[in-house]
Image (spheres, rainbow, N blue to C red):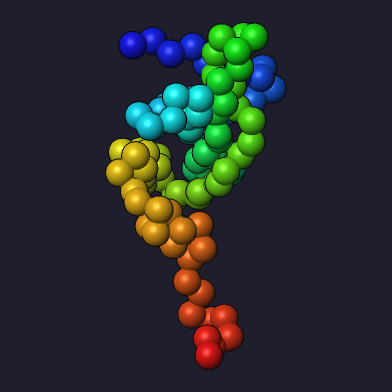
Length: 105
């Protein structure tokens, strides 16, 4: 099935579209992953897509998260795992534990 997506030109000028994910239980939303290199680290940005009735296509409405990887392989491995992460795993990725932070009471 070919799902139409529309990206702003300024997004495509700076980044590479890695893929999209469309949950089976929510037909009006999706997720797009785009990447770029920031010096040496690879950066993966995750965007929420929303269906635009006028364009009859999905378009990015907000950035949800960004992740840094030291290699392209790490980025690709993460992309392969991303659709299978549950909510708790994603929360931990978005809020990594910092053992140098103050002690939790």
